[in-house]
Image: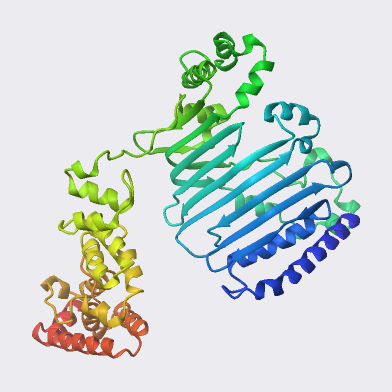
Length: 536
């Protein structure tokens, strides 16, 4: 135990020294803070390489860190084993990581891309000779190994794309698109709490005989026996596929295979094993048919999941991989995967301006073209989805012009409109923001003044843009009357608005106009008497 502790201590010291040694180099990079995620990852990567040199010879040509854009490029990496592993060599021309972030975008996208990678067959020990027969050389070459990912924090949506290209061997491509995906570990915190023993004698290098117990009795007299935490994956799958294309591997392997191994009978016997009539049997039959097609004309085998509607799943009920395969029922073919979206063959012939405009706005089924999308969607009024799409497209170049569209989307009840309003408002000066909203003396409905609660609810609705156009001046006007009757939530709303806009003159002017309108409401509508009567 003590020897293990000393080893961990020595390793920790070495890593710490390396990390601190990397910090000055990071601090010299002026394109971003030393605490930018890419700079931190770059420093850890340098430290990891220094630590790994304890077990292998490692050299690289350059490590470029772009802290501002969240990217790292590693060039000309060479790894060679030491001693008995000296014949294991790995070379890498370039490895690039982009989209590095620890805290930031709601919609995170990244990519890991490695090119010109070679792994010597000798790295795999006794299997080296067999691997050499498959590769036709002394190493496994990879022209490209790339993984792209996208994760939306709010919705839980996740997309992954994979590409592996090995010249004269094979090309592998895959993708998975989840509308929502999450791990399910309901008793994780309970298990963590049970495993956190504040008094563990063995951790300090000694044993207490008084604590010895019969091994058949468990860890304590109160132990309930071993339990296994229930772990699963659940979510909603939109589409997925995996394709393997032959680039020469089959031509090298087929001559050394027994002729009967690739016969239709042998494929059926080796693949189709499930009971007739079961879902897994149908999947196996599809796979066997695709393998027979590949043997007849070596090219590609593709497994794809393309449901008509997103499929909800929960893996906790699955006991084997076959259960998952049978549930999703992939379709096997000898061609490339079908697009997961309906494609528009001729955009100029599409008669539905709304559908085409939204497709152009999102780049779904047709190449993205915001200019054409705005032209098609701008004449359409009273459509929440269209208004929100227009706001998103226009906001980057002209937030002031995008703001009315976001207001319309919020008024029509579009789900993402309040968040869009907040993003646009962050780019607008206060004067432009207030001028785009209804002024504080705009007409209001009689029901807004029915009670203190009605005043408060109407004020909050104007503040949030919930079912009505957002207007901070009208929110102030309504809240002022409710606050005058002692409503704390309305007074807090007024304080929030003051804190947000501070002492800006344009806000003070709008606020005073709203205050005058509130005084007029108070007197003409006899709110003092009405609200006092409602309270009695």
